[in-house]
Image (cartoon, rainbow, N blue to C red; front, side):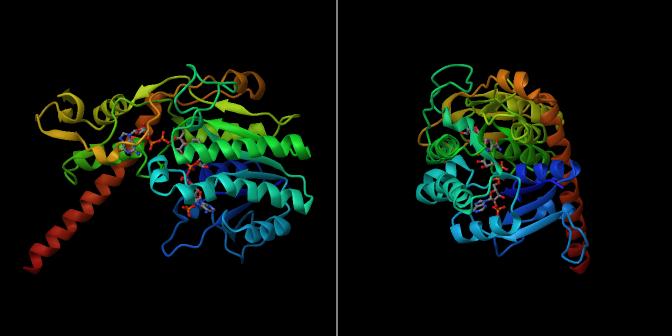
Length: 359
Ligand code: NAP
Ligand code: GDD
């Protein structure tokens, strides 16, 4: 039975990848961090306790900042494939924690590669590289040969990890590849990334649970795809005869403002925009009430203005194309978040009624 190790298994991509690998008959091992709150929500539906005979999902405590834990896990699991998805993955937060981001997102991959080299095992290794590495883009669209110009501590850490992966491939003959993935989202996306922040807020505003949504740069353009489609590309990269790096993207770009427009329209609250610069506001077109405002705290010291990927190589060599369009992606997310908001509203009404009865 094929055996894979996934770092970052509790994250958005880790959860979809674990599902995919289990479907394909793999034994899946995941690295999880100790936390004071539960952090396994995205994979709880896959969990199998130690009492389950021949269980195919096994979780190990470890940390990308702790080389000895990585060594121990690799020695015990001896995986045929490693997917290094663990990272401090929030770009804005990386400006607040540049050193920590460098440790986890950059050096973390070196710890993993070095553990593989020292143990003399020969798994295939996937490194979660990012379109954020293109930063202040040198060309449009961006492909595998586009030079990097990262614009955040996160992007810089990813560039370092990218080159370490290339170096271990060339220096030691490891099957190690970079997937340069453009933004990908889903109903499981962390709630501080802009897509989910918008769909969560749209659901809550429509259900009267929240007044306004505060955002930063509405003009930023991103090439957004669906995370479930993108983890399939990761797997395909490790099934090739030769290790190579690939761009994975939808080939379509939209502004944050356009994302808001579609999300709020699908939630039943079409928007109208008025004002300029920091004074620009999004209004509920029916009631005339402002529902979106700019808060400069969400701006980044240096921004990536435009990302647009060219995934021709992935199409030709991996047979990969994105199955889900931008409109379908936003619909999936908004349907999920309208449901969550409806449940939250029901709970709130029940609590309010109880409080009235007590009085
Ligand atoms: P995510 O939801 O933020 O998940 C990150 C994962 O990394 C979580 O499981 C997290 O664990 C884990 N992690 C954080 N610090 C760690 C540490 N010190 N040691 C071990 N694990 C640690 O990210 P994602 O969206 O799934 O992205 C997966 C990977 O692809 C990341 O490397 C990201 O940088 C990269 N990437 C993402 C995109 C995208 O658009 N989503 C695009 C390009 C590249 P906890 O759950 O305990 O926090
Ligand atoms: N998060 C956030 N919050 N972003 C905002 C906001 C806000 O309130 N308002 C505007 N934005 C803009 C950001 O400035 C950025 O230009 C864009 O929305 C997307 O921001 P994020 O969703 O935080 O994603 P990201 O592009 O910075 O980074 C994501 O994609 C990378 C791939 O390009 C992350 O998933 C990275 O881990 C990933 O590598």
